[in-house]
Image 1 (cartoon, rainbow over the protein chains, first blue to last red):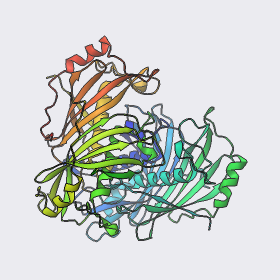
Image 2: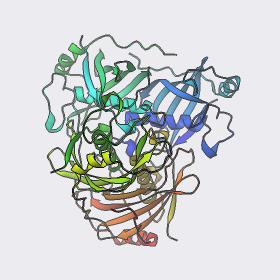
Image 3: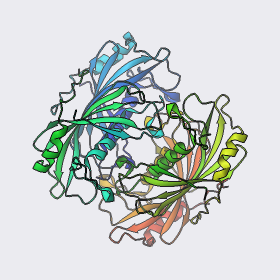
Image 4: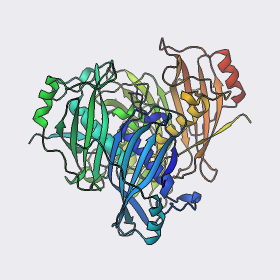
Length: 153
Length: 153
Length: 153
Length: 153
């Protein structure tokens, strides 16, 4: 199973007045899972095979979020334990890829399923650029079926 | 044309280090457009025909976000002028509805297109409840074609 | 009375699980009051006498927050009406100034009193720079007694 | 030395367009340090001696933030490594206490110094209540000199 499991800490301020993680804050949790998996930043560059999508100040490329889709399946309450975000690649395109996620709450239940389309951008020109062979090579082991969203109109 | 145009103020803190409104913050802008259109809250209850979806503390019903889909078409930079969110209803179901949006940036360009599925919940039982005839009557004048998302896998 | 009254819209996501504006979110409301008063940005440059503290991308100077102090006097609940932030200048220094605020909730009660020390920074060098005579001239009409904080240890 | 060192993960969305952790977001980092140290919540109740300040839904008491003061000493850039927040108690009062912090950036430099006054509140009455002997006993080992803020007007 090519999924990666990423622990993502929640914050008290992610909750809204309903006492659950706010719908928009959930996307911030996904953003952190994505960065933890794919970005090599700062002094903490890691050698993980997946850390190939550049990010952070001074990188020659960066990623843009082009599209997101998310189903909220169960409310997520605050815990000091991180949520577990299962993450995989649902599609690899010419200059883009789709990252898929399942957010698992404290009891293991799936609180959300989501997908993010991201585009590789050349920092100098500000334009999309093709994924390199190295990037493809690093991403392909994570390739799995994309999410079938059940609640589309 | 049944769309409502809702001015939604941006915040400096909505920007991330790329200098654009962050992908998750964009959903917070949509949330504010939705609340301004559909919620009657506090002392500022308005008599707008659309203010029929209860919200806020003490209401007998509330709304849950079940699903969201968004395409980011152009980066949105900070302005002190509000963005204009065009909002309409794309679908009315038994206990749910789909709110559609186009976010227009300062020059009028469409920065994002999005849809949110929301479910009516009975506050006492915590379970979905059917839309009332009054709610349907208020929502139907806003009914228009749902968004055709172009970037789905 | 040299105070300026700035309407600042709240957001539903400013609330935390206690149903009140979160302590950190209150500082975001102050930031928006500050920007509305002092920054001339984008196409919406205004000719207000106070719009003298540069900000936004491409400006030759920017402001840094060096210090903040805030007393929370009453919980602030969500309203669709903006809060009114009364704002004045408590001190003008060589390269810095202190902005003072009172945040007035829906019923007019004071929910918070706060002060922010901001430093003028030259964008090219990244170093503090002296306030210009024009800046002083614009700020002085807003000068009033700084806040006496009552709850300091 | 009675200080506790709490690792607090940053988020990319904490950055603003200057590329540094936003001034208000810094207080959210402090909130997380406070919760990690003092709250016993959910299934993850820990037996740490300091986990005595109740929090979370259903607790018989909760804490309110009454006052905060913060000096920003150096900009904090995004890292995937947590910041280290050193935390101690600067004062124990009848129904309140002062939490003090130093935020250490990736290189170890102090990026901010801050203090938060928190008040114990009885959940049933909504009114302040005295610290119990157990609470005092747990907090006293963390008592140290409060921060001397250098930049007060």
